[in-house]
Image (cartoon, rainbow, N blue to C red):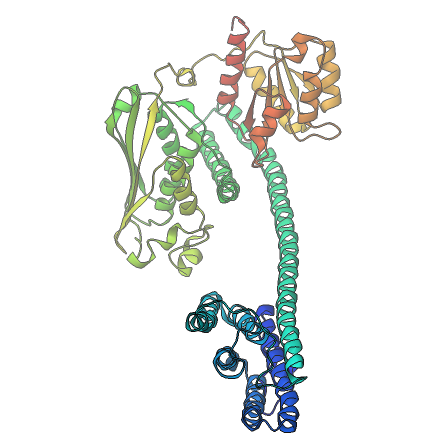
Length: 593
């Protein structure tokens, strides 16, 4: 930043270089112009007053020339004197108005009116609105007093009494110049300020556009990475599910449990990272699916018990048995995610003892049921000073926590944000070295309809014989997986490797259902679906289409609906969930399955 000018500085440019604001610069310019013009006026008066032998005017002019010169030098020395000099100049104008009205001319002449205008102008332009109003009133008071004293309104006179010609005419002209320059300088500063704001707005729009592009790039990157990660993971989880029916020894069952748990852990980690991005952009919404909460929590705990057992911990589940008989509507994926994160953390930070999950009914009526979930452990506990910070993203209780236990620091942040979707919040009770307890309450809507999913058990015979299915999938491993899954359901689907092949098969055959992969070469799932919907054959154009996707783009659901798809499943999907959707289609078509 430029240094303040020295006292002996005579350069206005040096002073302006210390003032960044254009409006403040304009005030200094206007004040400087007023001072210079005032000096010029006095210099004109001095020789004329001397020539006309007007001694009082000459003495006053000499005093004013010294005063204006000193004020000009004072102004150029530092910007802080600008306000003080502005007040002085306005008050000097008031003195001149009084002097003209009651001393020299004894009439309301042009010069008096000019100085009144300059006082009003200076109050607003050099100071602020408040002083502008104050000095405007102050400038008018002498005129009002003069009118009252004289008893009537005097006409404007060009009286030169007290000031000889041509001094009077020159003073009037210079006063007009002062008024015009004052307006011009302020307007120039105003235009400059507006242009700077417009330039800043343009830069802001460019920055916003770049930020939007960056956000879209991040979203596209995450969507691509999600697809690349979830596609092979779908095969791993699917094949593990198929192997569960072909076990021949307890050792194989144990190995399969480890495989399933590792895949589920990887799936949870991927979901945490991707869902945190969705939560940040407020694009995550809850589904409403019929669920038996008792069965859901037992399934969650069966996977976590393996992790607890590896550390020599006991995982205790205390669940209200009445929940068996109360089906609800909720988002099972988010409930699982919350419990996986909280229980997984409890197991990770507990070296001995147990982890206890309690689920109990707090209140219930015909429409809703309120349930309290609590997860308690006998682990390291949390310092009271750190209890709030651990819910922030990428944050753990200390650096040693990350070093000794690992983790991304996203789990609790995601739990906190997910619970806001359920209109709930997480509570923490903990003492360092004595364990922790997390708890939260959720009010669920009761689902009084029978839950078909609960009737689908391992012993049930899955049968989709007679359902004509087209699978559009470019990944050969996923195609093989689906082929094996459908074989277990007594069904042999038709396969297409891309959108163009799918269109050929749809034109040649009638299908009850199409499973459509979204990301495919040549013609993707969206475009393929739209072309199918445009077919003239009504039976072919209205065939139900379920998207199979590994994408996590924020507007995925909207894009699927806009393309004309009926539903979607996210990879890696549960075969039982796929079966449930297929049976629903079959029932709608009155197929006897």
